[in-house]
Image (cartoon, rainbow, N blue to C red; front, side):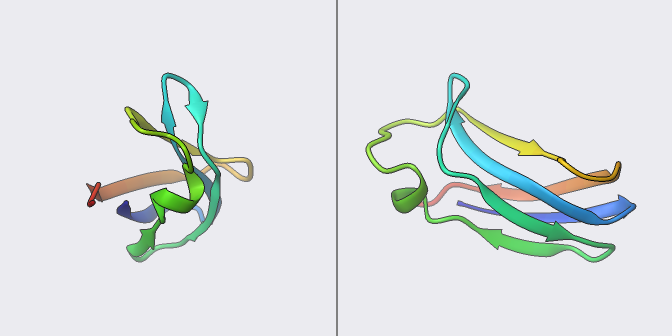
Length: 76
């Protein structure tokens, strides 16, 4: 899975986790700033044993920021 993230205002770290019906796979911590940055998550390793996904959760455990998400892709 890959996606691009950028902070429109603020900066910091967010947590990205693929999930199925609210049950999250392993989380990936990503630092975001004013420029788009690519994130690649190996679904086979963070979602071992999971056969389906239906959501991506992005949490901001830190300071408030406005987050832009682009080009979310699931690839076999």
